[in-house]
Amino acid sequence: MRFSFCMPGANVLLTEKEQKEENMAFYYERCREVTKKLGLEVFESNIGTLNRLSDDEVDYLSAKYPDGALGLYAFNGLLPDMPNIVTATEEETKTLLRHIDKTVSRLEKLGSKILVFGSGWNRKIPEDFDNATAEEKIRSFIRYTEECCRGAGVTLVLEPLNKSETNWCNTVSDGAKIVRELALPSFMLLADGYHMSKESEDPSVVIKNRDILRHCHIASAERYMPGSGEYERRFIEALSEAGYEGTVSVECGYSDFFAEAPRAIEFMKSAVK
Image (cartoon, rainbow, N blue to C red):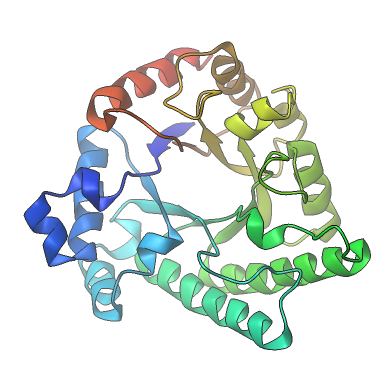
């Protein structure tokens, strides 16, 4: 098991002068630097930030840090400012799929390995919408995205989100059922300790689904740095018992990232059996 952070934005990692230069390639190099100073190997970002990179910046990072040397292992926030998958028109669906094509191509160039399908709003089913039609539209989107990911050496992971964020796939058990039913080689499961705690899901569910678990997120019950509650420790302990060898990314808010991040790492390491 290894730990990482969903890295804070440019407003935290860059000086005001550096922010004005809007050099997002430099931002990712700073993320790499901060990650190494924390004693970690990899970090996570979001697709909204990735979209701010120019094609030239992607090529620059790809050439300078080949074979994943940048350490940018995972991306979340798959569909920023994108249509709802369920209610999308034919043209909007084409827009979604073009976005996937571009996104996965960029991940391949950067050597990234995990693409998170969370995006609660984008998969929310309207109350008056036919559930069977909605389910098929979401699964069709997953099939397309997984096929793109498979060709690029990327794993698409399904992130269950609590009921306050979406009404499709709310628990790890829900997600495991979908992953097993679709049975796609590059489509696996994510477990997020925050969402699990919101749904009062027993952490032992990760042990039952260890064979399809490929990525994890963690935060406190208040969605801040882990280390303040019993559930975070039980979550890490269950992952340890499961023999989980993937990455656990801290995805949360914070008051002072540089002061709080080392304490979160210390807590998570102490919870590993």
